[in-house]
Image (cartoon, rainbow, N blue to C red):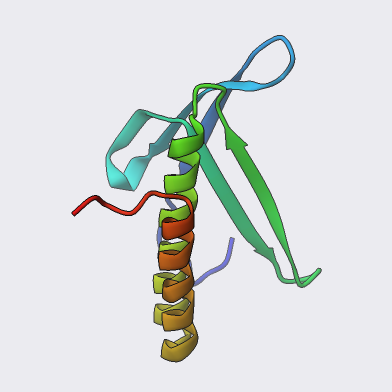
Length: 115
């Protein structure tokens, strides 16, 4: 174990599969976030592999996730990515471009809030 690590925290995902190995349930736990067996319909996990200089990904969603929910899930994920990238890099201009695209995406997907 790295000597700089003072504490560890565990996040777990449990995916229930049907006979065809398709996800029918997703539950997650985060011990430090006081999350215990919380239900979810989808998740996207991205991990950076430093050695390969590549992203490893797992994207799963349950059969019950509707197309409208998936549109909103993607929209919110893209917005969160812009926020995270801005905090990590201070690249404000490109993050504003990404947020502009998110607005365009929401408009095209017809998921903008009704005024």
